[in-house]
Picture (cartoon, rainbow, N blue to C red):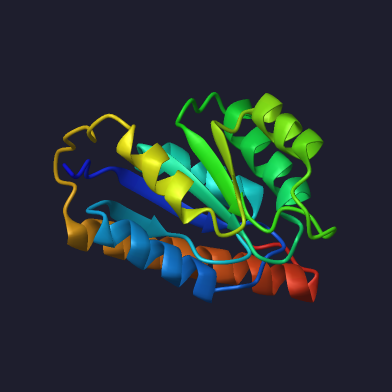
Length: 172
């Protein structure tokens, strides 16, 4: 199988504080030959949209474990589309608290701007989707060190935003 080397922006949703699913997904995506910029958990919609606009990824992957992926996913994709970002965006994981995939929620997520919706644990379908993507664009100066440093900056910003939100103060 030919590797696509897609530049992927990986993120958790605004209310999902789970980290290990993101680590697993990052390792899975990197094993397939893709470059991954992992924003981590609890990423507010405006931070996701800002980093996406700055980094110009080939794909955004949104992951949810806490069962609020449907609600949080709608906010995330709407924030991206409101900024005019046309990057492909996919979401997967536990999207609802009922425990079963809801076809109506899947339809609403697609209507809101997601390009694909994956059920919890549907790694085979995600792998197929990734295989269907075009090869990544060549970017001047886009090395692994720059991506890692930008990821660390985004993580620090996300953590500051979450901590400030927890204290009820805005971050300047």
